[in-house]
Image 1: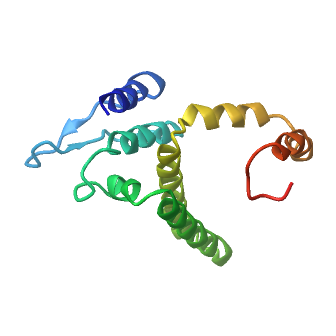
Image 2: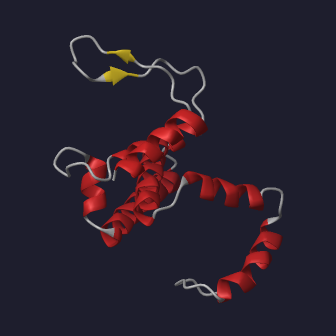
Image 3: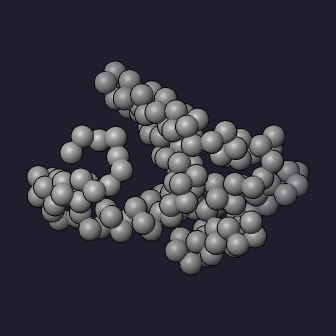
Length: 155
């Protein structure tokens, strides 16, 4: 358990250093992040580390812990629900709602990664591997590899 938390802290300190936080007046231990000039994708690494650090927290005190305690099937179901909501907003042309739903999808995807024992670097490496390949070439390159893996996808 402690190793997982220290791993999360290591990610926060090395791969994606979080900005220094200020104490919120009158809120005790709650801190507020400084304003960000240009938010970037490193927020996903920080959020993953936060979800990982809450894996063993009390489900009554942490939404992430509650999701993780419900098991893989429920986590996947919640991800699917959020993805459908995202699609609905996209099809409806509701840009502001699409932003909010996209954030929900990404959060629930990170919860799935934590549940599956995946680290963001694994996904970033796969994306980097695919970068610069055409979609057709990339799909053709992975088709034979998929034949030997367990998946519900039809090759």
